[in-house]
Length: 426
Ligand code: AMP
Image (cartoon, rainbow, N blue to C red; front, top):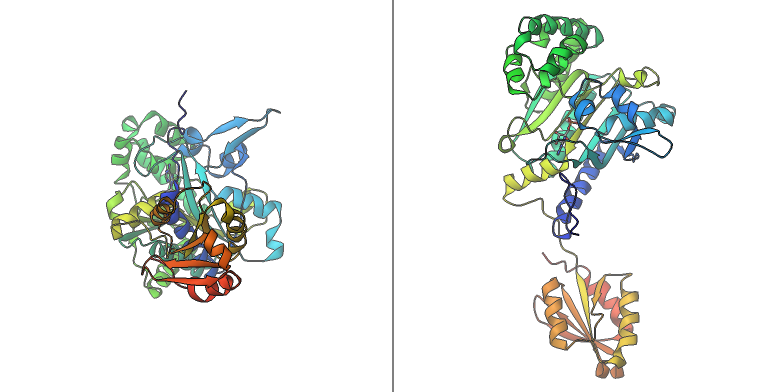
């Protein structure tokens, strides 16, 4: 029996994990500077949470959720997105009592039963942020700018920002009626799903993946014409503050996004090379969601970035993935002869409080151990043979220069702190 990773999933192997860690660390740094704090929620939740929030008519809920029953017949789903769980936690833990304006971020795997292809997986990863508790358009502009900064930190350069506003509840409802009229005249050309959506949720037709529905959506009346005064002013203000922050954007009247909870501002970052159907990430306001989930009336806005796509775009923009950063210095402790083993084994263990130490678990030749040190790309080799042991010394060799010194065993820690730890290898 040969086992394989499930279709649409992938292993992140040690050779690639460096770019993942670097991206997640860079994102964490930027998010922290903007005042966001990390939150970690379970990877599965009650199925109903997503049905209610993401929306019954969305592709995510209709076709893409991984659902299962536990032993007590309770229905759960692997999380297909991060916002609903964060809001569930916000309400359950009454986080508004702790801070009136909560800025939270998450990093982790999401699951959608999608058709696997380039940039589309069944387990994928997101970095996302939620700013909960303000309706100010300053927050919209800042969240969008923050998303752009996160992409920049990942080394993604050629981004295109698309922006739209769905308006508040009143505007959205008006627009839904207009869309229903528009599509009703073209009902025969709609796919069966969209014919149903015509009655249940006409906005969802705009992100149908069937090409003929996409064609029909191209000439829809622009949402902007249906925005009420408050929504129009908000949208204008968001654009104003984006201009102040010198964030370039394109208006996109079809940008409704594939989740039901959005109101007012919606946005997506795209990348020329990935194609328009594959966004790097997106987000929007969801001013009604907290209340709909049983919390207090609380406006909010958030975004999520798909890590796989960000790393793909970064590799295209710089010809290589995000750098895994400077490689740390380290020591390969070569031991020779059984007599040196006990001291070497103890030494390696204690030096690891200071620095990376590798040691051969087999009793192999000097040549074999040096070859291994070279293969691992370690900065220094420390040699402890029986003769060195008798002299209470070790030999230390810097691999890059070949320079070699004898150091007393009692002075090794000092030598590492002053001479090795700072010589990082590229
Ligand atoms: P969404 O929640 O659908 O707006 O997705 C936000 C971002 O998550 C997208 O722009 C992608 O970068 C990423 N994403 C969503 N679905 C997938 C998937 N099936 N595979 C890989 N990345 C995905």
